[in-house]
Length: 505
Image 1 (cartoon, one colour):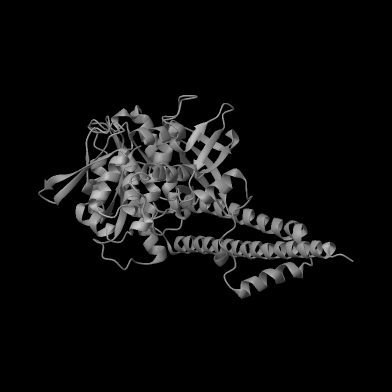
Image 2 (cartoon, rainbow, N blue to C red):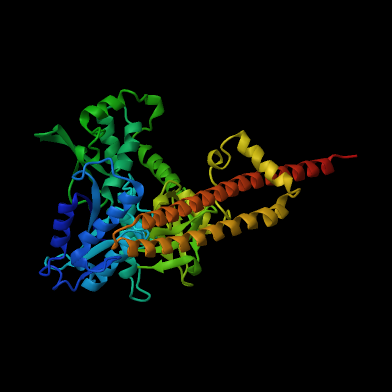
């Protein structure tokens, strides 16, 4: 996967220098590996971006920052491993798609692929000012994470052009690898058990021997003082592990920490040395038997199948749609082309929302329910769907006004709201396309007062449409909350009815 790095560009002079640097013909095969988006001439990109910012100032007003402090552009460096086996043209296209998805296609940019070093890399510079709403791109806390995940997804897509390519690994291979090679994890599991079942250091050493751990406390380190070396004798661990490498933060396996811990153990609460091996095996097997969240992902659910992962398009709630990457070590491929997935409740998966600013991490417990179909739609948390009593009352009133309930309410109200959402979304898309075209034309002219008023009118229309969209979404959430209440009441009514029938006459 490529690595990504982002830089800010402040003031016009630095932008001019940066664009000149990335377009260097000696690095870009005579500028054959350069291109622009909403830019007519890449060597003039800094000027064209400047015109957009000028128009923004005329419409939205002057920035409150000094000219040499304002972020005028963002510079992304996307570097690829030489072993990726991608052509310069493919790398260039990966960069172009990455920035388009990150910015939603609303910002001008220029991209150059440098091939003068062992590792090919993209330089992408995009205007911080949007060509649509003329506002600044907000680089927030999660934007770096979002950029990396978008970059990984698109790069993985391009690296997966070989049909029916086998996965680099699988859940079965990964678990086998952990058992055979993850010596540190195995060692720590055994040591943690011994920490709870030893009463002094000598007792600890005897029991460690029973669990096939060699303990050598006769070592010193310049930085850490007395050091204990641990080595598994029943597995081919080549080098002993020093205590500070197993736990750097608190050195819980150091001599002093061990003695400190043993003082809190009581002889009646620990296993004898003769019992220790069987007791550990029993506990280990119990942990191993704790089931993963196991379910099957069908071929039709998979948007892209690559050597590293599968990408699945999911709907999160009623209002958010995007792509989830599930890495190969969480999967085993079945004969019919489907995949068996193995999740832990606390696993985290990155959800790349179609609206980039809403991307987030989803827990394994949530994602497994979405993918397995155990619950059709994942409802929003109650504290967001029903924020307070007034909203709950509004939800009930909304349904009672129509004198409908249950399934009929879905038909009467839900479809109307969904139609409204789709209608406004389409209107927003059409308006954005019109604004983009209009702004592209006007930025090259000396804006007249009439032009300024025209731009402002379009921006106000867009703002009003967005406000309407948010109102409809809020109504939808209120409606969903009401539906939840109605369904609960119907369920409660049904239960009471059954109880009444069970009462003997």
